[in-house]
Length: 537
Image (cartoon, rainbow, N blue to C red):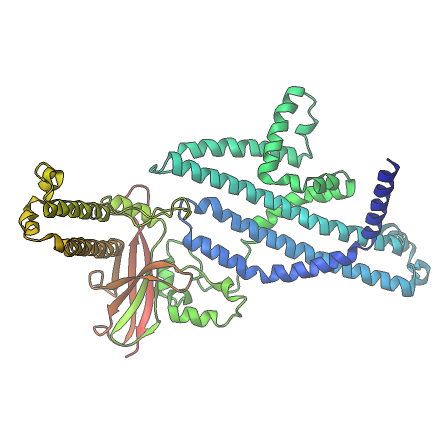
């Protein structure tokens, strides 16, 4: 027992000594973290662009809010650690000044009585000022990581809900249109109980203070479950030690409005300088196509987009990238025989095309897949049917050549009987050649089907676009191919249109694209985009 106490005392003394020297570690960690956080901006923007471009529509509302939380965490670390370094620098400067000047001599300043009393009351001694700086610096450092862990809990809880919702949707409602009732019920229960835990968290354990045994037992297990789901058990000692002190408890209550300001304000804040020029970089207004018609927007042209991005460093370039909205011309000033326009395929087009062409087999299932469980590939019934038919014909051919007795009443005879004479004219030595001929025949049929299927899928996608140049329709004269645009790897069609019939000078390409809305198949609402360009020779 004495040995354990001795070890405990030694450990406590070591912690006391380490506590006195912790400012060095704080400065080191803050400096390295600030550098890493500043460098991570491009990584976060790349992740956001990836989510925006590649996530399927039904998963985007579940996962895209996580990006806002990541940006809020970025802002918390950037702001708090910068403040921490400034305060620590001020603290070190104050200690250096104390070595030279000692305490504050108010008599030497010769201020009037009212200012002397005010400064003595507010500032006190210089040592007290240094102590306040030390305490505030240490608290802000720990407060930063506590806020991050609280945000991480929010991220993890939403991730748990998203994963469970995906499982419920894929297992119980694979073909259900709209929000499945099972997910709505799960969301109501999950976030309803989570809201109770949040109230308990904000009130510093208000529900934990209820003395009723029945209530305590029920809430105890709710609390334990959400502690695991949110991973809050990792930072609970830090939290409890933070709220058991009056000084730090006030900072804890400041955490909630602080995070709300960062989450709601940081991403929404902007500075406007040009009051009388319409913002053609802003999307979402129903009159955007009128603004596009009178503007040369760099994001509507491949050449101007590249030129725009070259003005930024490699680190900042991802921050300036944005998703192509509906279409992009290859150049603003065109020459030669043909011009090029990229037509963006939107993830929500999947549902609309499925309703418009229910007979067409999709290539892959929409959503998150895993190669070890299900890679998302959808079986083409025609291809599989041709493979089965090929095996059946080979089986029939072998029976004919080998004069098997069960040939007359076989299913293969009823299906391939018209080939009997062809196969009986062959000898047993020709079995290999016959098998090769059958395989080649069905391979040609599968290749033809695959080629026709790919061509039809392109025509289906293209049919939802209507294109004019000035007042002349080009919808039926475009030559299009599937294309992955190098901007953010957007998928869509790259289409060529003739320039020879266009006069030198300004022109406008008008695009209308049907988009998924409710259960429309025909006469769907349309996105409109007008892009000016100029023919120079």
